[in-house]
Amino acid sequence: MIVVKSKVKEAAKGCNVAGDAAEALNEVAHSLIAAAAKRAEANGRKTIQAKDVFVGDHVVEPMLVVKSKVKEAADGMSVSGDFGEALNSMLVWSVEQGAARAEANGRKTLGARDL
Image (cartoon, rainbow, N blue to C red; front, side, top):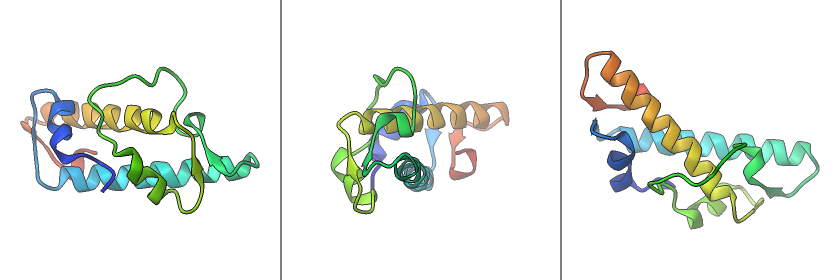
């Protein structure tokens, strides 16, 4: 599991978090890593870098990503030091958007369907 389940609620900012939300977010993380690996390979690199998943400021709290697990999910690719923060930025954004979607639909719980 790349995502720290206990941190998802912190990122959801006041929304409850369903049991399936962390698993769904973990699947999002795996998809982002796979897409980043393809971008790196297309650019002739064997190292996944932050720019392969996110361009912008990478300092976002809370840290949802277990960096040591990212390397395992990268299927033999190397991972740059800033990739974990960039991936985290995308996942926190996904949780915030999902929480807003749940609230817009009159629900107080973030679920897998919101991600």
